[in-house]
Length: 138
Image 1 (cartoon, rainbow, N blue to C red):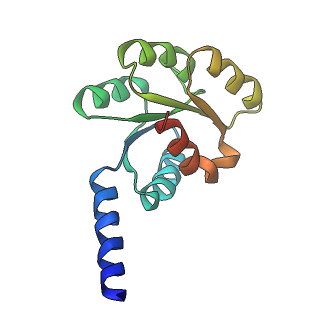
Image 2 (image 1 turned 90 degrees about the vertical axis):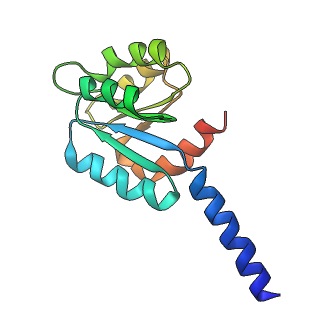
């Protein structure tokens, strides 16, 4: 009985790994990307990283991606500019906007009007896995 239960759980885990969602983390801060990876991978997500918007669009053309974790405030081409473009070019991809800026509450509210599927203050990064699961189940 215990062996059968273990085998069933192993099969479910293997199935979950095969069906893992691909998440692209777009943030100019390398340490935030590393933290997001450290949080997402144990939850079963496959993580792709990008440090700028141009590289993000290249990654999206080269990889099947289910969701993008998008930093709103970056030098050069920022998340506010990228968000409408992402929604237009890749409408099937879910977008979770993130910000750690002083005005992050305002920025995250604006991101909803620009088409973000969800938003999260970087100080609450621990909630990223459950938030992505909800967003991807829509």
